[in-house]
Image (cartoon, helix red, strand yellow):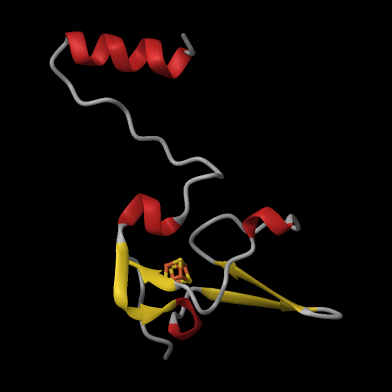
Length: 85
Ligand code: SF4
């Protein structure tokens, strides 16, 4: 049993909900829900790094040099979507 599973089992015994911790593997859409009306490409939090090619990151999520934190601009937005100014 992992540490999180132990904590969640204890919380259940206490009548509380299991913990929800954001991790690098949880996307913004998984953490906050999907906004099907908009796309990330139109969000003010989109960050584009231009090198030999352009890498897109979410300014509210993880912005590291790793491809694991790249986002697709064509994906459905999350509930934190805000229009570009
Ligand atoms: S819609 Fe959500 S995931 Fe996409 S860029 Fe905006 S804040 Fe980030």
